[in-house]
Image (cartoon, rainbow, N blue to C red; front, side):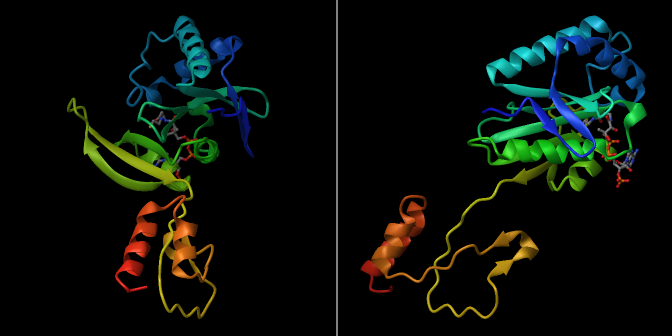
Length: 234
Ligand SMILES: CC(C)(COP(=O)(O)OP(=O)(O)OC[C@H]1O[C@@H](n2cnc3c(N)ncnc32)[C@H](O)[C@@H]1OP(=O)(O)O)[C@@H](O)C(=O)NCCC(=O)NCCS
């Protein structure tokens, strides 16, 4: 995977973390402790420059190893006002998005813009089908961010250590799902926007050609069609 080192958005830029930003990171955390501490276990009153350096060094190493892609959130004025990233910890095919904002810059839609931008970047990576946001159920603001960024609420689970309830939101990439039908009469443009699905192609094919068309990507439908033909149903 090769996410870009800079992701521009309309209001802030996401830029791969740089060592020289450690002082800005430390002071952003210090200024935001009251808001960060309930949801970020690393945000403690002792957080300082050494912790910021460790985080940035780790982010640079993770980026090079291809495990996580952490970005500073940088205003147009060049001020570091938060952190965000794509993480692989949920396994193959999935990237998780995390974010936090300097309290002095919260409430301006930055996190929503960031989540939208990283969802687009994540879903463009090879093999990635889903991007996920997880948050504590008590963190209503984070849930609003996920919802406004176009994520679908999948559900909630009790956290294994009994520390609370975690809510999961997902956005998925486009998938082609062939459907087979006979005697179709098309009465209007073939779209179904209500549930996000869209008919992108309608082909009228003899059975053998339809099997050949489906087989490379969709062995199940190809087999169903082949079986139907053998049974004299198609
Ligand atoms: C959660 C956080 C990232 C939101 O950042 P932000 O830039 O302020 O987010 P946005 O401005 O894009 O949107 C915030 C939304 O939450 C809402 N919100 C903020 N605080 C809220 C609260 N206490 N209760 C309910 N909604 C709240 C805002 O009203 C807004 O929704 P709206 O546009 O419908 O009014 C930021 O508050 C933060 O860093 N919190 C601490 C760290 C954290 O929780 N990170 C996420 C961990 S999963």
